[in-house]
Image (cartoon, rainbow, N blue to C red; front, top):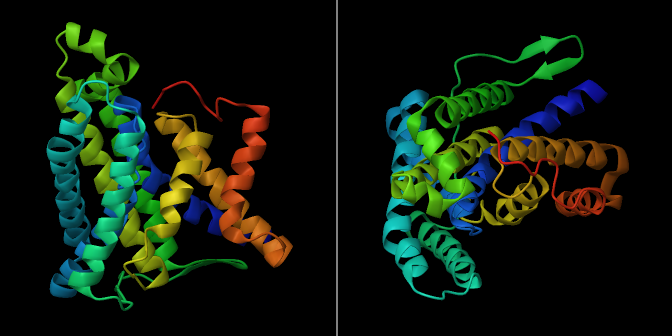
Length: 290
């Protein structure tokens, strides 16, 4: 049923958008593609798994995992990216290579510490599926949709109604002028890592609950789809990232269902990216707005 597949696509697209949001915010300020954000996706899923296994409290699980992963992001910036970018005449590819190495290291550490096997969340969401005629909304889907909308509303509020959000926008627009105007650009950068890595952690937990399984390789596919989404949405554009995530989620779902295996599912994101960029090279929404 078409409506059922559209809902499926929106759910998947929401998770994609959450995963890519961190890389979008970080690119908006630092002009680097932080592939390590997909490592936060994996780390958040595993941190959430162990917290939920110990407490069986869903709210506590999400809050603790997002806070811990967000703080890890701040530390990575302070002790890794910050010193690298402070070097004079640094080549733009160096931070990218660093982020790829950090992502690989994250997966290997998770494999060594937590084991290479699959782990199941078995989360009790406390409510059952909703049936709307022939459309079925599974509890996991409802959780993903609710949390995604909530997190994006929080992001919109932070970026548009707080001083820190305005500082982020000013820094993303022109860091030099922002510093000259007395804006604390370091705090704005820290905000990118806190929000970005915590959103990736939430997305990792959602996927773990959606499919009831996590593995150390969980972030491999999101790591390259994330690149397609942030380019498609317009580099550094939070609103564009949301739209691009939904577009790719819907395209993957509908094409996979109605065209079968004729087009490999994981290649659809890049097919959509190429087609859109041929028409609009700057992406769906090139203006940096929230």
